Image (cartoon, rainbow, N blue to C red; front, top):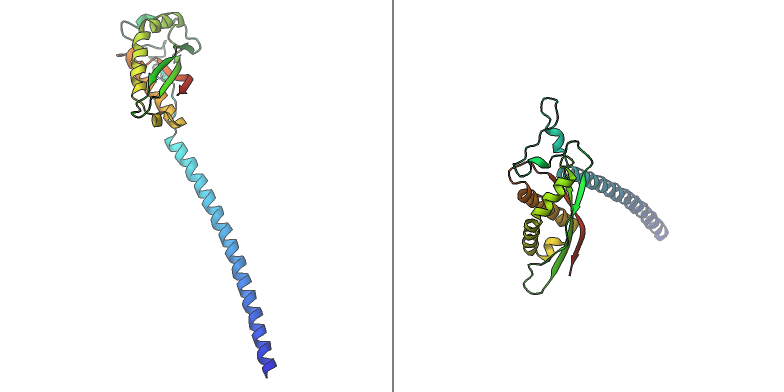
Length: 195
């Protein structure tokens, strides 16, 4: 009788081991399924948010067509003669380096920036270069003050650098073309060094 009791206990142990093995394997499968779903949902959400918050660039020059004739430029008296007779490729103008102390109270840190301006293709390069040369002291002053207002954290990371590029482009367009359509398309960093 003791042998029958031992046999029943052994059978029950084997059944419980088999049941726990099935539970473990189904639990393992469930884990991998949940992990795959989480990865897929995260990737989709990241893609969707990137599309939602990503910036789109539109060519504003194409939007100023008037009655199917030549494109009109809404420039002030200072910039009216800068428009090119025939549109050419986008042209670039590189400013000299600007150095400014960062707004860091405990340590002396500075930033050195060299910018390249991407000008609209409807501005004549020769006249536009002369115009920018004339306005260069104003641009340099504005840029120095703007950079001096930044902290070290404001300059870190690509998101911050893109924001800075956009703000510099907006500021330069205000200084160069205060009452006209912006002719400075983008600002590129040729050099940016923080020490």
